[in-house]
Image (tube, rainbow, N blue to C red; front, side, top):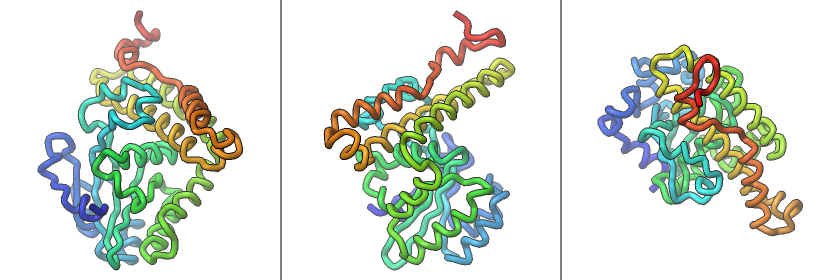
Length: 275
């Protein structure tokens, strides 16, 4: 089943109890909807509608974490599997169908590495979107990336470039190579935990932020591991064609991303983590 058909069938009633901000319909309707949590990008949305007035949008789509995925088992961040059902979501997906081709752009709101992790989670082979990976481009939605979004949608809509080629060009722009990606991933994770350490002790309802923190670190580790494993250049030139060695290095890279356990976050006080 293609991406348009899968997404178009998503019904808000299915997700109402889990995601009351879920929306699935025309981009034109979304712009004026009370469920539009992205009003700062309305100008960009209007420009996209000039490309195709029939663009659709799915907002707040819950994502499963596959327990069968090899990468998920290898990176061994078990706390991610303790998260409440559907606690990881794709904030925004813009999708369309043209000339019997289905295409979609999915967005993270944080950074490009987490966007890649979100994509890899959504498109695991054993999950619903597993066969649509070549139809989906993943990006980070920020004010400074809006021109990139316009260019990407235009190129995809006109069929000028394959989705994979577009993704590789974005990879080159935003993460350059997997070694630099690892360094950035470590810094990202440390910054996330530093911020949470400051914020959590002041909060009465800790659950949402704790779940978000665990999810974000999981996505970072997931992105780094899979990106390393997908590099044919590393396989050939660094690991001499030995997939086992490549897997060992990918795991070691992922292990460098620091984690804090779910239980530790719950025990966090202004003076540090309670014993």
